[in-house]
Length: 272
Image 1: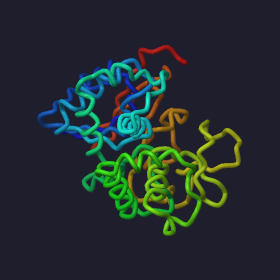
Image 2: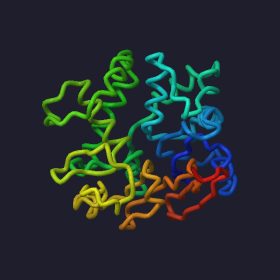
Image 3: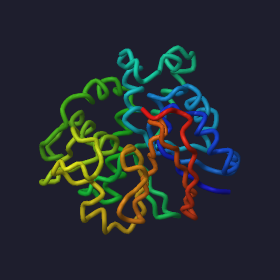
Image 4: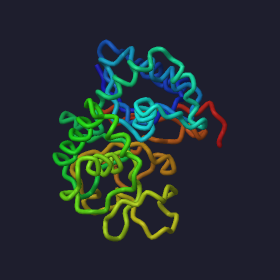
């Protein structure tokens, strides 16, 4: 029995499947935690969804921004971006089942046995682990509720800058999913900046979220994806960045949670 976490698939099924074979992943006894962005940009998002749905009892996904966007496009009847290469997904008769499955998945989770917190983009430095899980539960209630359509319709508005305690539920939902799925840099006054997407040394006078003192001194292992430009490199051993840019010609990274041993599969795609 083994537990694994794996970086952003983004439709790169061949590399995903190769990694599972290399570690002899057995769905009957092992468990796989995915840090989100299952779909989009890669060549076979449908195969990724099919695998996860088939083995859902052995799978947990902390949803990413591309996963939420897929749900939003479906519920709002919006055509996906052609660059996301989701035509096969939207032509699948099983899409309603895949959407329903994704709506059961969390934004964040804590694995006590490994003292590890997992989410797509990371941990808001203003939140404790317990607070983060409460925010994640609130957001999941929103995107899995009968009113999910309304929450997704409001998800694309500007990021709220008011005191979080003063936000209405739609704003609170947007505030929460932005931190869990889109966060990279923070401003000098600790606000979320969504415009910068480059490397840490890009000279933009912003601070990576994981350089905040509350994060650098955290006692938990923080496992995340989303930031391919990091190429898996962080300044502290308790920060595990698993998005190594497979869809951009880099690699896909899997880690065994007990030993922290990494397995890397080079991308079959050319660098973009």
